Amino acid sequence: MSVAEAEKAPGAQKAPAVAAAKEAASSPFKTESRLERLFAQGEFVVTAEIGPPKSASSKGIKENARLLKDATDGQNLTDNQTAIVRLSSIAAAVHVLSEGGNPIMQMVCRDRNRIAMQSDLLGAYSLGIRQTLCLSGDHQSFGNHPTAKNVYDIDSIQLIQAVKGLRDDKKFLSGDDCKIPPKFYIGAAANPFADPFEFRVLRLEKKIKAGADFIQTQAIFDFDRFEKFMAAVRERGLHQKINIMAGIIPVKSAKAMEYMKTVPGMIVPDDLIARIKGAADQAAAGVDLAVEMIQRVRKIEGVRGVHLMAVGWEEKVPEIVEKAGLLPRPKMSA
Image (cartoon, rainbow, N blue to C red; front, side, top):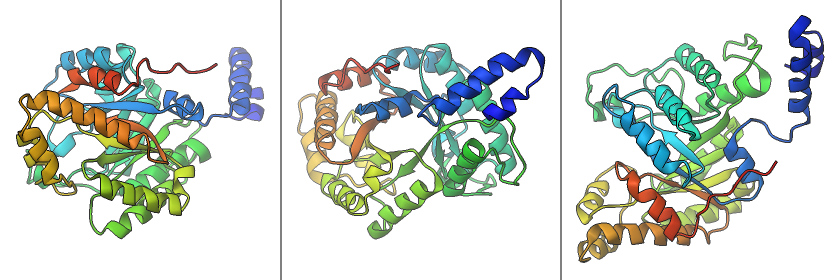
């Protein structure tokens, strides 16, 4: 609502509506997002992933939210990751909110058309969710319903445009007005390790132009390739247009790394696998490797934070963040 619109608001709603609109008009921020404010303060931001369960239980989500809320600045709730049916990311985000966390609701294009996605965006914002991550989603053939019919009515770049259009232009994709728009801080993903490599930076640029505010990358194990990617990002000046967070997966064992090597879009060098395989305590070596990776990416110009994907090992995230020298987490300035 603009100040002029607010001043026309009738009766009892007039004073608070005018005050809110004037505050919004004077704010240097696009949203109410904690992430937006921390990036603006120049902080090195830390987020972590929480995978919703394959059940209707909120217990594990709430436990992980309590575990991570003071060790990270935001918690991603995945949306039926790997195309397996799980508790919805919207419900999971609300459970994180109830424990004092700062949810980042992931939304994939695989399962909904544009009507359902825009409806869910409105609903999520009304429930207090202020950040979303826009993704295409893994193909349904990888999940537990391989014969399901996918949707992909719009792709991830179009979804970013849709969220931005709602937020900034108060317009649905149809062109209809949205009187009270959801003001999400918009995230997107980038994978420097997929082929063709030359296309990776161009795709990142498309997401920036579509309206993405921050990027979380695929997990990094091949640092030479990631540094080459970031060099290309800097060459095009993209690091000055968006906040890039480097993806980190803490690994429990060499066996887990060997599995990840088979996942499309991931590169896991053999020397890293050998290093973990040769350790007396593979889990401890995995924690040390994660800490080392965080310290390496912090030195790369253009990297503004890290995103930890613990994949069921969330209890190690606070330890990793502390060993990386990233605790306590910063407070938002007034």
